[in-house]
Image 1 (cartoon, one colour):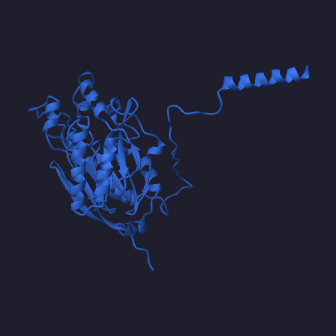
Image 2 (spheres, one colour):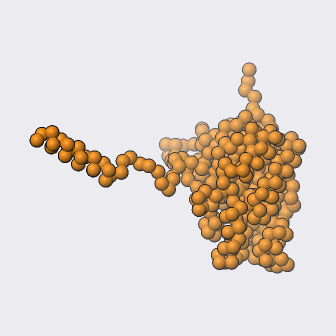
Image 3 (spheres, helix red, strand yellow):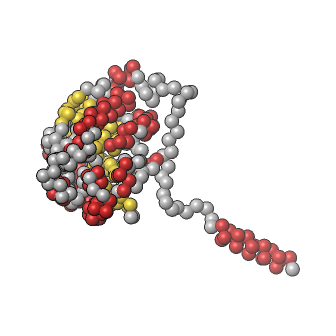
Length: 340
């Protein structure tokens, strides 16, 4: 009997966070998970750092003015394995869906820009930390390491993702492709609503290009999901009635086939849930022409070396040298005493 490929519905949640409020952002995420499941979704994807929100002030304020906001972000960031992630897991389990949640993760004294992956039972499958925070994001987040480039085997297919400007890191994209990725979640902030930057008007074009190109180049379905800016962000940044600096709205969300065809969206500005049917058999037709990690690769000429090993700051490694020397000297003294 011929193989049959999975078919399912994916949801891209284009929404604003409850800015710098972890608990209320999680409440909103749980509601949106339920709403997505009611529309038949099997996979629900959220924007970059949906919990507790994206630090838009890094593009509009000095580091000094942004320090109190950073404190709020730090105290509202999410520790993996805490009550906060338990609540998202419970929502995923009740809805029977996979969830990819963008969040500001806290570990020790450092924050990370993270995608957290939940399975249908609500268990955490793993995480992706942004490998290289972009530009002034480096004042907020630390960097991920090679262990943060996973592709997860699920009953929907092989699932992985990247965050924002990581889509310009062709080697990171290919690392996912080489692991057989079939479903890609791309997370972005609603930067297009930052009007003080003359380039912000082109940002959505950049996002669309990155999303559609990854779909084609990796032969995968892309669930591209952005946040948006609401009135609360303007109020908290003290930028109300300054449309030359920032406005409400923003973002570019869509669900895209491996050929770059739009299955849902694109959606800009308004809060919504995009839902589309995914049929993994469609990948076969593109692989027929171009399997980027198979018959269309030339490892005799070009080859990717990927270090997937975690890089902790501190870990035990062998014996402490002075202890080894002390043991050796003690053994020598004992040997000399026996000889005497």
